[in-house]
Length: 460
Image 1 (spheres, rainbow, N blue to C red):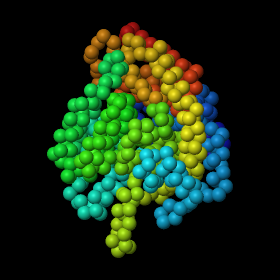
Image 2: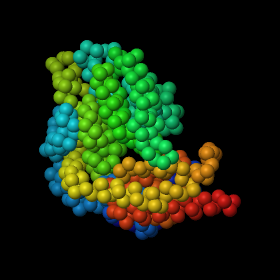
Image 3: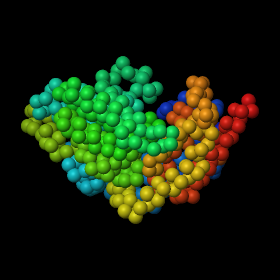
Image 4: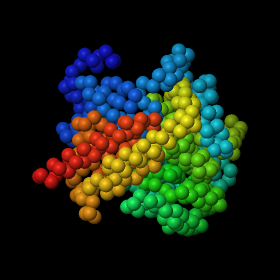
């Protein structure tokens, strides 16, 4: 296939792509302004198109990449596994690689989370947690516990259960009639224009949650939360102590806590897992994106022995969890994930992620924080989002027809950086083991792209 692609010219591939490939979260009518690139190769933290143009992977290939493209250790793990087994069903059978990965995930998770259920992506990891929680309460004689609670502004994926617990917005609103009802509580308003996070800013959010649990707790099965940072909401942050407070409220109300660490896990915020770092024991933990280092699709839902035991029974009782996927626990993906997690443990111990976090903050503050068209910069770990504005002193937002975020990202692309906007906000999510000089390049390119885009607007 690689040989074939090299014999085809760009125009042929572009036509076939336009005719036959449906790109997710992409408006096809914008193709003339933002034509999809044909990415042929990756090396380190850089991607190359068919014409040999080089781009810094400023989205970590949709927030997944940990240690770059073509990493020798991960490549070798994949090749070694391929010599033994490419795939075998996990329905009723196992294979050594997934067994070892299950144990490794139990080791790095909070102590109560001892069992791993594998799926293919973050949406499904959340779906599985929801189904496990719902069925658990049915199995132990608490059928009234069917409701779910989630935070406003949340994003948990695109399958119907995941959309249901999402916080609305254009991602899911069109499908709302097909989603189940969920109780939402407000997110903490924890950032001032200075970027300082205040613990007291979580008070109204926690008070609202307390009232909800007091009123409906005996009917609530689970609460779903992105801990520390809401990624797709624009890297909205939660203050220190907020997660512990939510966990305590759930425990008191006998409500399952489902933590969605699909985005924030595996070093993205500076630690292996947010819940472990904050000393919180959830009932379910959803993992994906960085699990395989960005190589292959794999996700896991971690849960407790207590939950797992509730699904055990005689054959005729049909207590088993009737959920699974054809490529669940694929050996190739599991092998890469195991090697990646083992290496990440060493990376974190050596302070490599902390060094990247410090460098990222330095270049953001030096280059972008005071830009006249950046209203706010939110950063935690190797995750950041910039809110754009027409003018720093102008409280007005862009008109709905103004695609400032996309235009700035296209300017960045022309300068060798790939980014993807969230409306008129721009997330910066580099590979986790990015080098300081690459972070400097990323921030300088974005500054130049902002300058170029808004200079055009002033002239017009």
